[in-house]
Amino acid sequence: MKPLHAFHFASPATFYPLAGRLQPLFALLALGLAVAGLYVGFFVAPTDAQQGDGYRIIFVHVPASWMSMFIYCVMAFWAAVGLAFNIRLAAMMASALAPTGAMFALLSLLTGALWGKPMWGAWWVWDARLTSELILFFLYLGFMALQAAIDDPRRADKAGAILALVGVVNVPIIYFSVRWWNTLHQGASVSMTKSPSMAQTMLWAMLLMALAFWMYSIAVALARLRNIILERERQTEWVRHAMAWRG
Amino acid sequence: MNAMVVSLRRDLLLAARRRSEVLTALFFFVVVVSLFPLGIGPETALLRRIGPGVLWVAALLATLLGLPRLFAADHADGTLEQMALSSQSFALQMAGKVAAHWLLCGLPLVLLAPLLGLQFGLDADALGVLMLSLLIGTPLLSLIGAIGAALTLGVRGGGVLLSLLVLPLFIPALVFGACSVEAQTAGLSVRGHLSALGAMLALAAFFAPWATTAALRIAME
Image: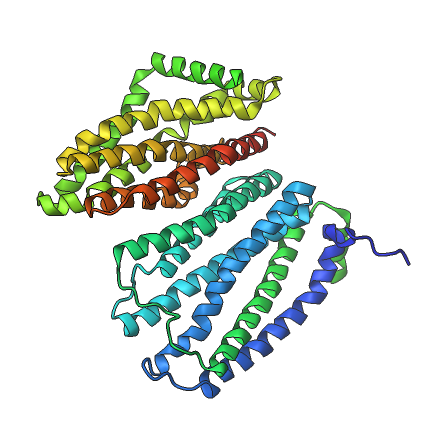
């Protein structure tokens, strides 16, 4: 047996079966963690004194926001790896992650609106966090639109990588500028995290949900990656073999 | 540096032969700004309140208007490839092109802004800050915009895509630019806002030409 080389799994042909084996594992983990997190969130965590049961949307809202930002960084990382080492798989990984990140950004916006209605009395408040989340959503859309508009996949990879890198430099700048803009204008500045002391169980539920979302992102990204690999490598011998074997 | 000056002069000369293109963006700026009082109503207090934001958003859009043409003509006739192949620094040549874009698209906006600001009832101090913030901010817009223009070069639906890519990246400039004028009106110090704009300009001036050339090389592969 050959010793395992560092870049052994950097080839789509070797990564495709590995992703196929890993994907159900992460999907199961996601399911288990989500069940545990939701159970703790809905049945164990105490009712909030001020917000009643309405606050429980936090267990989806906050992890979704975390994941949307985290995935952007991961996406930019893989894009940079793809650009620097000219690894096709890394670039495919970046494009596989983008829709999931955009979905989490949208989920965070939607749950934020649903939460805002009973708490602030409005569906949308120009809160610093919500606004920067919206901009992050736009950045994801821009990345996906750019990749979709370029026919040549290699060019789409590289152009998307540069955009992701420019975006990841800009994300903190945007975040702090929006925060400053918000403090200057003194809008409805009800902070979401100002709740005096979060009960230990609430934190646990949030962490469990964040882990569940993380595992879900990996599982979905791997599934999407497998499809991208098949689509791009369809002219190669090993894909034909794999498909024939599957029947 | 010589390469930058040469490409700057070349673009200015080309623009001087086709003046209408420069005037279009300027005219667009004036029209967009004038639409707001028509849409909102002529109350002075309200106009004074929204003036800085309206002028800044209009400047953003006017800058955007000229961006698709930034590299398109040179790409179409092969000049861009010759520039990339020449022994001179490609990044400096592109910096020259961006500087030309700013001189033709950004600087006229800066000079015209006080006149339009008067229509919004801004006082002399606010107009000064508005000009200063646009003076620092519009080169920043041109630099960031050039990355987007390079990425969308020769891409289907490039113009619309360009605005989707670039406008979110313009947001910090808009925030600090428009807020500086409001801070001046409110009697606060504007130094922090302008410093932040200047810092972003320094950052963009260093990195944007590099990102632009990388994107252009990808587009020309």
